[in-house]
Amino acid sequence: MENEILKEVIHEIESALKDSLGITSHQRRLAFSLSLESVTLLEDYLKKSNVLKPGAKINHLWLKKKKENAKKLISNQITINIEELKEIDKILNIVYKIEKERNELAYGKIVSETILKNQINLFLDLKKIIENV
Image (tube, rainbow, N blue to C red; front, side, top):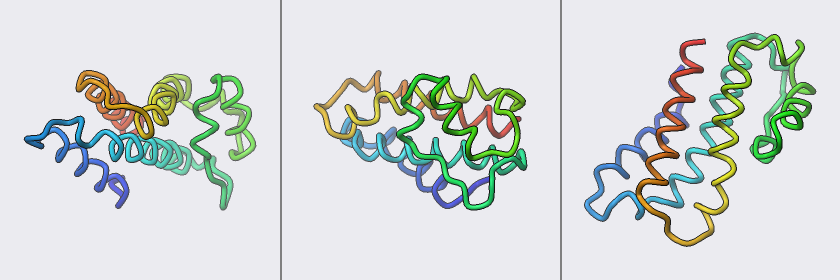
């Protein structure tokens, strides 16, 4: 399931965690990377489930909406009832938490390392869930 975007995001996470300047020096890159790969993982999950319509894309902006609204938008991109997808609520809850913080992390002031590590852990949880579905 490893794709080029995933490799890049994992590299960014590793670089951030090892950087002598601290993880906060990677805040903006992490915000964009985690958001991008969260959407990519969701699309990969839908493709792996053989339900994503040909040429369909998921817009990251949909994923910071209420879960019901996100489900409606995603439903237009898939071939089955979204409720039939295993773990979809858990996946959307995690992606929502990543997307909710995206703009603040990308464009706002520097936040604590704890917040950034939480975002990384959310992403890693998402990756693990999707890999195991």
